[in-house]
Length: 256
Image (cartoon, rainbow, N blue to C red):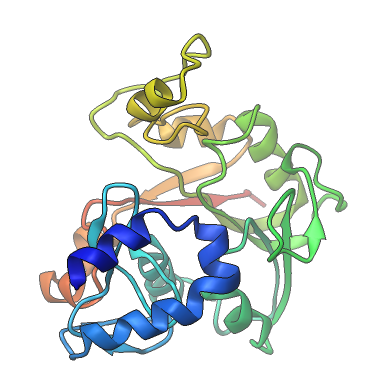
């Protein structure tokens, strides 16, 4: 049964899963009952999380809120290392993740705005290359797994920098190949199968390397490569929450 679940989830597009298939994920979660893992976003416990992704990553998808490994890591980071849950903040969330939207909208300390050029989950239709807000508007911005898709990521990051207030901060995550010293692009590769092999997905325009912080800094940010999961969480916590054990958090600050 679990191998069938893995195969089915591998081919369900995430937008479909977010809009319609969340009820199916909750049903599938019945086959994963237990208390070995816990989702910090919604508090649900399971024997394991559902498999998910093109390669069928094991123990990845929370059946209750659809959080993935990176979402659970970000939530813990916000809880333990930022003022996100305690201070009055105006927040711009680009390409908002399903598991966060309802929770963040209900937080009384936040003025929370979701935006994207395509996502039906976002309230504001917006091209990140031309953000329709004045400079110095937001205290916080989130923009995860977007920069590998956009035409000009330096322009996109400079727009995020522009709309943040001095002293504001952003979390900007992207897929990253830590084996590469520099970011890899090659527009001459047009075959979808080849692009997936080179860039991990056929709709990725680039694959960032260990220079990702330097690339984000081109937009004007002071970038901190935070080793939160590597240095501050225990092995037991990484296992309990099923976190990406080597992922860095890119904490980007607009200097006052």
